[in-house]
Every structure is written in structure tokens, then in C-alpha cells.
Image 1 (tube, rainbow, N blue to C red):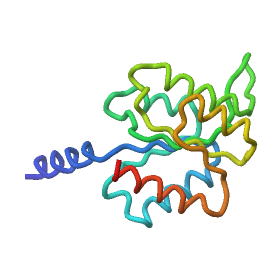
Image 2: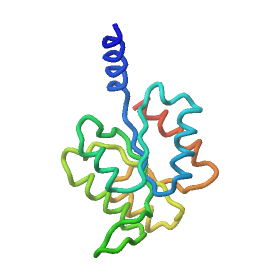
Image 3: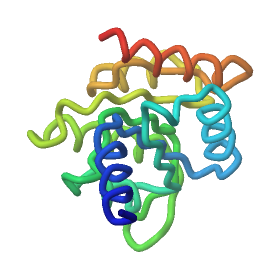
Length: 153
């Protein structure tokens, strides 16, 4: 009986759309998780949060955990020439890799950043992001609205 219950719970979890949040800021990850839970989105969606690209690709490249939707910060740490650097290059590199790989091209990607410069927004959208959000007060509600809009698409 217990095994049957676990099998049903597992099957229900597999039916949920998967959302992956990538951001190096733990406060942003916690805020996203709390907003997600408070609005009851955990009934329809399975949320995973990670702090860097290396962790993200563990989920992205696994067919069982590959997300349907990715929310990602643009400026994050990445390794270059043996050093850790922080720049928008990390977010742009992620977008390019996702959109150039046939197995991940269909993943919906929403980019958010503290930078409101048109060049960042333009480049993110040209590389395949569906939206570019400015981090700020409205971001939690924007996230909820975006996730709910996916139900209608």
C-alpha cells in the first residue's frame, strides 16, 4: 500500500511542469521560492533553485529533470581562465548554449537583471530569451503573472 502511494505521488510530480531558477543571490532564490509557495504554484509546478551554471546544467541535461521554464539572472559568477569572474557573459553564454542545442531549444527562458540598459535587454532577447525583467519591487508579482500566463499558452 505504501509503495503504491509513493508511486502515485511520484507520478503526480512527474506531471508537473518544471521550473528552474538560476541566481547566485541566495536572497533572490529564497524570495522566489516563498512567492512561488505563497501563491500556490507548487500544485502545478515543480520548482528547483540553483546558484550557478554548473548546478543548472545538472538539471538541464537530465531528461527527467529538464525544465520547461528557466528564470535566470543575467550577471553571475563564472570560471574563466582559472579565475572566477562576474559579468553578464554568464547569462548570455547560458542563453546561447540553450538555444543552439536541439534538446534544449524549446525551454522557455526568462532573464532578470539589475541592469536596465537596452543593450543587455536587446542581446538577451536576440539570443532567445522570451522576456527580460528588471529586478525590483514588482519582480515577485511579475514572476507570478508570467508563470500563470504559461497556463494559457
